[in-house]
Length: 159
Image 1 (cartoon, rainbow, N blue to C red):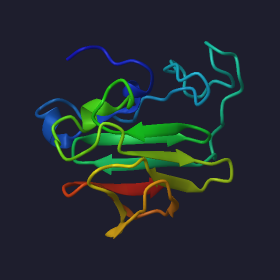
Image 2: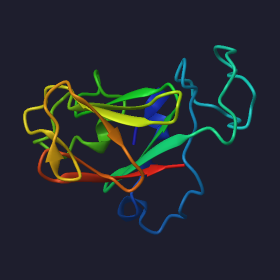
Image 3: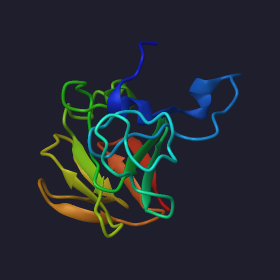
Image 4: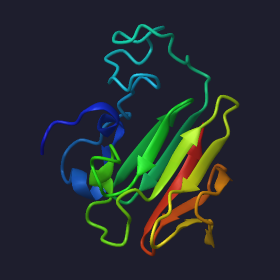
């Protein structure tokens, strides 16, 4: 597997993909501003851009898909889709032909509210079974089901 960069490092493989390997204890962290992978997630500032980092107690959005877990910090916008040029976590979705190259965007605003927006996908973005109109932003809550197209469903976790 090629090395991961930037947001790609926020992805954990699914349990099935892990096989007999030891289960990792946590997701890799990244700077929400410059997207550099953080070697010390507890640091007060990013080593790359030197901006202050959100500290413990700040909200985190996790979306658990069958192919891995995505982690989004406050202020970070993450495009979900199959095209690596548009979605830094494309490897999560490449096996699904019905997921658009630039399918949807998820983010966590400074107040701790999680959001999703369909980016004009062909087969739709759904929250708890309800299809979002193109370009419409919808809030996500802990436990929600986020589905891309017909068969890629993730569970939202906010903490």
